[in-house]
Image (cartoon, rainbow, N blue to C red; front, top):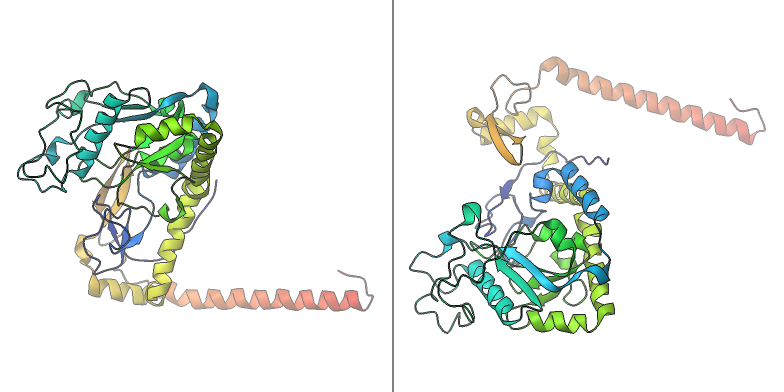
Length: 369
C-alpha cells in the first residue's frame, strides 16, 4: 500500500455543494458550482470510498473483477436518482433547483426515447416523497420551458427500481446529472469513470479538481434533454468510437481518481498552498507554531475530526493532550532537537568521508574495504 505524507498546513475546507462563498482565508474546495471563477483551491471530494482510500481501493478491485465486455452491455444511457422535495418551496427564482429541473428533463427524455435513455426516479424508502412532479415555477415559462416538457404534473411513470454499481458496469452509456438540491456536482460521478462505459455529462457549469483533463467527445460527451437520445444512437452506429470513449473515461479514473492519485494530488495541493504562503516558517518551528495558534485560535474549543463508520465526527482536544497545537513544546525536547540534528549531520559527514576515501583507494589500485 502506498504512503503519502501531508505537510504541516492550515486551511479552511469548503464542502458545500455550492462551493466557497468567500475566501478570506486559505480555502480548499471540493467543487465550484458556477465554474473556475469562484475562489478557492480545488481538491478531491471526500466521498471516494466514503473518505477512506483503502475502502476505495477495495471497491475498485471488485469493480475490475466484474468487468463486462462491450458487446454484452446494455445499449441505453443508464441513470437512477431522486428529486429533492426541499428544493421546491415557493417563491423560487428560475435558476433555483437546477438539479431537480435537470433530472426532470432526463426523465422526460427517457419517456420520449426509452430505447436510448433509461433514466428513472428512485422513490423508495426515505425518498418516498421525492418523485412528485410539480408544475413549472410561476413566471419562469421562458427560462425553464424544457424542464417539465413531456411530463404531466404528478406523473408516476418516471419511477423506476433501484440499481447498483454492477448495473452501471453492464451499461455502455452512463448518465451523470447535477445534484438534486442545488444542481452542483454529484458524487455518483466518482465511480462512473471506472466502469469503462461512455460517460454522458449533463450540461452544467460546476467543476471539480480534475475537470481540466476532460474534453468533450474525447473523454466524455456533454448532453442535455434534446441531445442525449440522439447521442446514444449515433454512438451505437459507431461502436469503435463508443468503445474508445469508454476507454478514455477509464483512463481518467486510472490517471486521476485511483487511490494513490487522489492522495498525491491532495498532498501536492496542500503543499503548494503552504509553500506559496510560507506556512513552514511558522508551522515547522514547534515553539513558533504554538505561539501562533495561541494568538489566532480558540485554544479551548479545538476539536479533532475522527472517522466513525461512513461518517465523520468531532471530539474536543483536551488541554493537557500532548498533541494540542497550543501547548508549548517541552523545553527538554526542544533542546534535544538541535543536538539530534547535529549528531545526524556529523554521522552523514563521516560516511561521506569514508566513501571518498574508498574511491581514492580504488583509483590507486589498493584493495577496497
